[in-house]
Image (cartoon, rainbow, N blue to C red; front, side, top):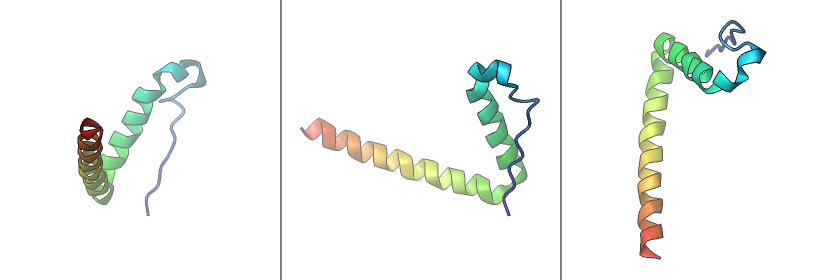
Length: 62
């Protein structure tokens, strides 16, 4: 079971502009503690790269 604990010390509302960095820290924590999630992210990343390449080829054909 994947548990995500949102740590307010990481993301106080006053610094929401740093939210991206905070989210990446949360994802890093999840990946470090959940090897299954890590491989899920990796396979999704590969899939996304393939999709992007396909779309780029279609656009350049136009």
